[in-house]
Length: 188
Image 1 (tube, rainbow, N blue to C red):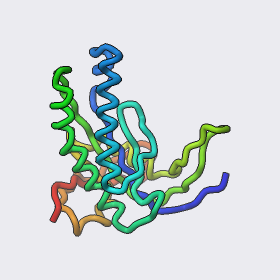
Image 2: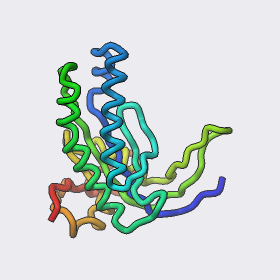
Image 3: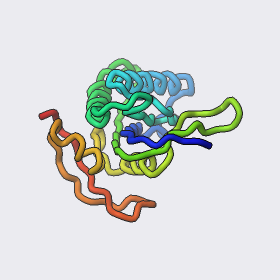
Image 4: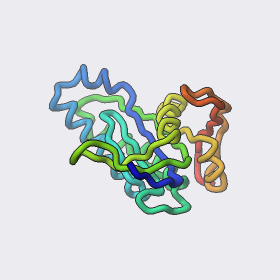
């Protein structure tokens, strides 16, 4: 398995309460809600030059800086996060017949990964391996409801473009050092 190292910004977006949603809606309705939700995520990510790497049921993992590397990848990831948050009220309106409360959490982390084709036979995916995808996924738990959290690595690359609140250092499962997190608030 040959891989290519590169810096990547990874965005995770998670829908809160999706298990309850699946339990409370008929399957066809749940499918419609999830398809509409994933369409909103896909559009918000790709309009900011993100690459949707995986649909994860109630979430999505996107890469910024892949397949084309570009310096503004971390900034674009945060812009995409804001876009997702801004588009959720319209999604709720579009699905109002279901009387839903849809909330998301977004996490973003930047680091060096190895890009590899992983899988068996014809079922291979281009995935980022290494610590950054895991850290990005675990940071979701620190994000406020309907908010974004970024790691210090992403913050350092974007601090001239956004206002931030520091959320302090946090222990992340599987990571030795505490991760300092920030909440982006707005463009400068």
